[in-house]
Image (cartoon, rainbow, N blue to C red; front, side):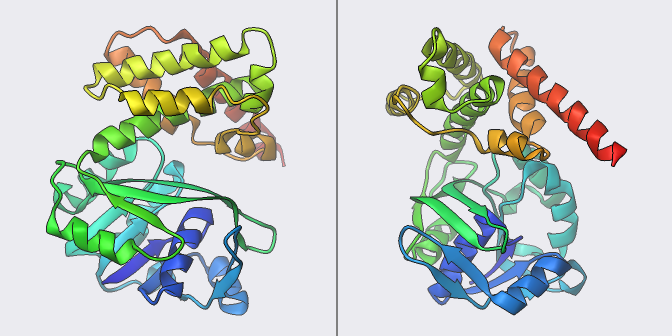
Length: 311
């Protein structure tokens, strides 16, 4: 199978590099500056499991003229519209589009653009970022991709893709319940992003103050209620995992959304917290803490845009 990875940032860069290293036919669709950097320095990965570099094949959007078997989409949600326009020529009749974006809104957008038949559901768990030299830095040894058919069937194409992605440095699983998996990650991310951005602090620091733990779990309960009303009640194992995640004393865990705020960057707040809150409104579910976190980040975005326009 021929794979097109959209972008070579932290997520696409990490998984794409692992696939290239394992001998998979991978091409990266990137912007001109990133293409030049990759041609000059290669795609470098700094990892707890050992550093490595590969020399990737790259394309610019105006050079893309043929379809691929797999399109791996890992861009930020606010970049999806531009990305779809750029990789559209790569989507043929038998192409599998595997998005590993945060949240759920992107499934509707991709389906509207390319049709339901080629869209898979997916999620990725990797703690990584780009450093000043354009290297992919993996902070922790988590490197999971879970994906599957939206309908829940374990299809032949999903099993073939699972085999393709089963390479060193990627923990992959084809799921028969990908929408359930995605909803649970949506709940977890909304809770983590909402509370750490609202408090501008890590989980450990929030736990260290009066009512900190209670605030985390009030927000968690709001998000779980939305998932349940949507037909995807969080499973017991997920709730137990997140209970431990959100009660680990001294935990340095914070959402990548908070790291975006700390850098003064644009966030995915409306695509994550905004979408979750909008779903709550349609279901007549009261979510005061979620609404407050959403408003907090919306105010941040107003100030960020004002600062950008003044420069």
